[in-house]
Amino acid sequence: MTALPLGIRENLTQFSHQLIQVLLVGFAIGMMRTVIPALAESEFGVARGSFLLLSAFVVAFGVVKAVMNFVAGRLSERIGRQRVLFWGWVIALPIPVMIWAAPNWGWIVAATVLLGINQGLCWSMTQTAKLDITRADQRGLTMGLNEFSGYVGVALAGVITAYAAEALGARMGLLIFGLAVVVTALVLTRVWVKDTLPWAKAETAAHKLSAPRHPPRYPQGVPEHPSTREVFALLSWRDKRLAALSQAGLVEKFVDALVWVIFPVFLVSRGASLTEMSWIVGAYGFVWGGSQLFTGRLSDHVGRFWPNVAGMWICGAGVLMVVLGEGAIWWSLSAGIAGFGMALLYPNLGAAVADISPPAWRGSAIGIYRFWRDLGYGIGALGLGLAAYLTGKPEAAFWFVALSMFASGAVLFIWCEETHPRLNPASTSKPG
Image 1: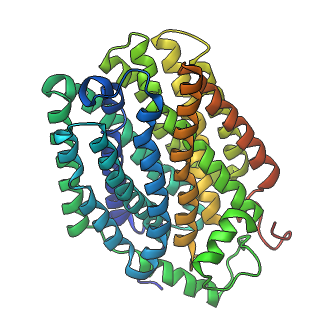
Image 2 (image 1 turned 90 degrees about the vertical axis):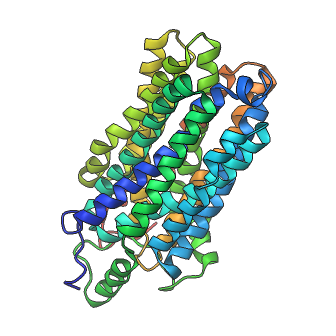
């Protein structure tokens, strides 16, 4: 046990390598989020107002990433975290070339399918690996740092690729940026990233030897090594707390789908330039990413419940504000408020799942939570695309997403509970 200590400081080198990995994962998705939707008409032949067609590549991304999250969690418990991460980057290699060569929008959809596989494998593994090597009282901070690094990467990539597109052309700018990101990630994964599965196994063994000071509220009546079907049932409906967290994760991705699909088009239609649009959209990502340095750590002190519930409602309010005013300053403020709400909920939904998932099947639990969460890309993109299509106005998509966030936050408030072991240990009351 002494050979495999838990803690950020104790595993700082590997923790840092994993932060670099998730930054690169954010770069990979960020290059697809700003330039491509904004230039869908001029570069890739998407007709003006084709909201459903524009949504198609995000629907494909969400469904594929959701399935790969599910697969990645289970697979990582068999072959290890590092190997899953490596193969995720191998799959990403063709993406920049496909964008550069794309004769039509179908190629962009196909490239996004590969991106979904990459993100499902790689982002899942960076998150799971950090949780493997850190302590229970650091989960909020761990998730906050992970998502800070990833979503700052998303925001930075959106701005960098917008300038690259103006300087070199959209296709060449994305080709150079994308290849640099993927090749760098492959080399770093192969040379410096270690597998963290042994830490998870050691934690499981330690729990058998002595009970933790603050026993987590694990689901009752579950075998030590449940089947995939059993874990899926727990996360989806059997355990009300885990089901509430999963549905909240699914609905919050409606916001990300909106920012990806509709927000750039909305801003360009209102006269924003490509670079101006990238900074307004970037305000959402920068506030989201930067605030998680605080909000993840906050939940280690005050708990997960209220940051999660408040985050759902604040984020919904920020989305609604976008269509209630005009101008770059107003849109940036609205995007920032939505980003802050997302920062409150995003690392802490995942931390809550980790709180009440035993280490023996935590990778599977996180993978299934992430399955439901990222399925929200597909469901959300389809829903907001339909709302915009049926009304002929992109503003309808903002209303659809905001109302969904308010309703989902109410479900989370009613069904869930505090999951932090120190604040609500199993010994004080029965699990829900």
